[in-house]
Length: 223
Image 1 (cartoon, rainbow, N blue to C red):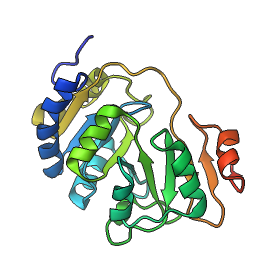
Image 2 (tube, rainbow, N blue to C red):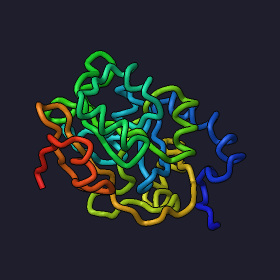
Image 3 (tube, rainbow, N blue to C red):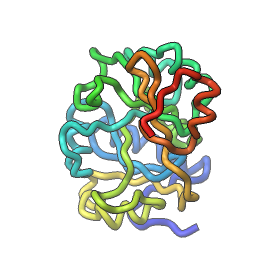
Image 4 (cartoon, rainbow, N blue to C red):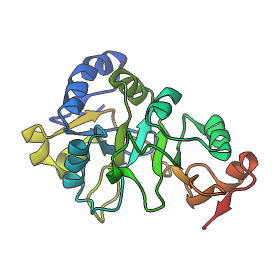
């Protein structure tokens, strides 16, 4: 496997175990992390205001366009103060861990307003990526997530693309990149807004509308 220079190996169980302590220290320091997901490589960090601002600066993300959260347990949802509606609970039970992002109400006391969408919800996904599950469980809290690309570019499929795009940030230590090899092409996560009276499909993706409707018949689609 070709490895990206200046990236931290994150493939084998031994590599994952070795990478976790330094990665947690990086997150605690409010710095940005590049990492693999079940779809594409992402950028993220801790959910405090300083870490979110650091991610916005690297991503060149305008205010008002929030990031989603990755979790690795139902307990994390509860600690964030997010509320699962009847429909979202059924969708989560069927498709989590998996490529389904749910926009949930709640979190007013725990989640910064910078992560809240225009409808007032917080986007959350329980990642099925085994290495990222281990990292998030070890860290003990959710991390932010956005695709690892600059505006107008496709999302990164390997760690080398992140290192190339953000070489100065990597060299300075502001960005730590976890290298899990090249990811197979896959559709993005499906996004369902569960903040309203009915769940609403706002971005088709890896899980199709028919599969969602089989679980949540009241699903409304904007597509």
